[in-house]
Length: 331
Length: 307
Image (cartoon, rainbow over all chains, first blue to last red):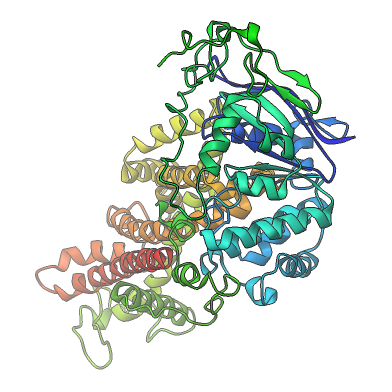
């Protein structure tokens, strides 16, 4: 049974549909990567799932955590579930910790809220959690303030908070983007280990396809607020079918080890349009080299084996009748 | 005002060092700076703190001892100048000026305390409500605040004293009420900044309810600004009380308030100018002390926020 099951999730703001009909599942112990450029709706999807959308944004659809629909329950119930059964790791650990609260107390907050621990019990639990996220001398760091810690340590603290109540599902929104490259790997290894130990389901939002290939089981590609492709890591990263996934892969795997290939780094033509500026039909067709007239109608998300893809002209499935032309391609 | 949120954004020394040492070993530095308290070399803070401490000690001492009873009349020794027996001389009834000033310090502190208590007890919760509920409730709080703000503080105090009868407490409640809008606005503006921060989002993400977030995250983060504001109001309230006493709307004679001492000394400005000088000087010094303390605290918090 899926730990987290998202069905037809949409997010709207002032008549604009920023996320449209997003569906995917994350099973217990499974790691699913949500990839796509900035502005593709990944973070909005995560925030909609936990019910933390900003003012003016509204979500519809379903996000089942076990047998409860997070979008359907009361705000009171959602507060009980957040941090207890579903946890969030934020992108920027520099701003996600309260500067006036000692580390130990902050780590113990979720436990006091959900498990009703006393101040002292929470403080003891916090030290143990800090040790679990490999913070050296946890007893001492528990008494520090956030500004006394480096970025990598702070992200470890965020992880300690996230796992404090043994959540079923962990949402990690680009957890290493704000960190030094040298620190990123260690933090990811830690996340990998923690998720394994907890047996939690992980939804990892990321740009980094190398991380995806190492850590994740399945990949969901988003573009223009829609899921355009999903499938297992092996099949997605070796044989992408949607031209957008294909382009993402080409752009990130082009860096050769010797750095002397002499070929320019492939880039995806154009940039992600602003919300509401996506073309009708397939949102990617303006930038897609394979687009045709047919793409002015939205392709359905079709399942082929373990893959789903929403494209009239998928890569590696050349159909002569499809009549791929460049006529329909807009600049 | 957003300075309080800065420590998270600005990479402190620990973070900077960790960046360079990151390639070797875990990304750990020497650890948190335990026990290294920054030495404060702020003149305002030290001077203001000393003056305020002096006033408090004086008021406390006056509770149990003054050179002479503050209300003891001595017709024979009227308007005596400074002497060994009466350090600051005596007034028109022969009362010892130093003793009256010392007793007056207690009244002065009391007035400041009551005003600040009234203004904060109403202003801070109202500001938090306005920040938390943007809709009708929040707007209602803000509009009521505007109305109150449009009313001159001293005029409000005079009206209230006239209606309820002159007394120190009435006057001070009036001053406190008049300064409620300041606290509503300062609280709301700062609380809005904190509520928009990522750590509040993180607190919501681990299930904290709005008022718990206010208690645990918003109040500690806006406390510094509020404390500074309280010091400033304290000095303003003391000035206002002196003015009300002078007008005969505050503390009733013969209680030795500095304002009424000034008022009574006015009649002897030519013959005995020192009689006006002492209470005036006392008001000046206390107001200066609280203002300096407020400025010094603001500086101190600012330094800590930038660390």
